[in-house]
Amino acid sequence: MKLAIVDLEYGNIGSIKLAFERLGVSPVVTADSDDLANADRVVLPGVGAAGHAMNRIDRRGLRDCLRSICQPALGICLGMQLLFDGSEEAETGCLGIIPGKVRALDPSPGMPVPHMGWSKLEVGDSGIGIASGDYVYFAHGYACDDGPATVATADYGHKIPAVVRKDNWLGAQFHPERSGAVGSRFLEAFLG
Image 1 (cartoon, rainbow, N blue to C red):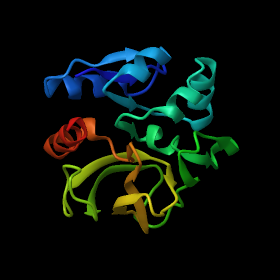
Image 2 (image 1 turned 135 degrees about the vertical axis):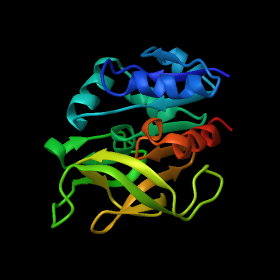
Image 3 (image 1 turned 90 degrees about the vertical axis):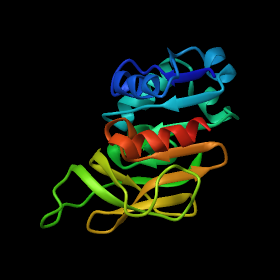
Image 4 (image 1 turned 60 degrees about the horizontal axis):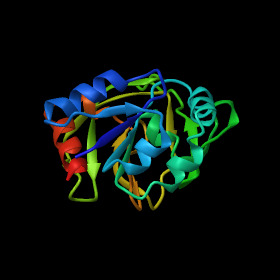
């Protein structure tokens, strides 16, 4: 299987690559649109700011490539957020694969921002390697709008989408590469 990780030259690429290697897959880290188009699976990683990530995507000429990918693809953390129409973060236009906006989390007592740590999932879709009651690791200050694409949520003062799915794209707000056995099951299910 050819697994391609989109090379944005920062973020969680190394830990994602290692997580897949533990599952017996050797990913290619690339910013080449032909490599991405011809891969069996594509992963869009991300840690940091939406505007910075979209600038890197645009400088590499990958916006149209990512929007037209037909094979199974996975956005992780910021990579999931980039699948939406836009982000409140510097009013950034994103890929527009999933309708909705990414909004800043509001801090509340016992719920500081960023949301960093383990949270329990409520899963409404089987076949993604995770189940209701599983705990996964989050590290984010923004969350996507809830909507028809949401297949799993976490409670952080209110329900936030933890996993989304639209067509061939799957997105995880949590970090499967940092979520132990549960994260490994999620990545295995993505590999199919």
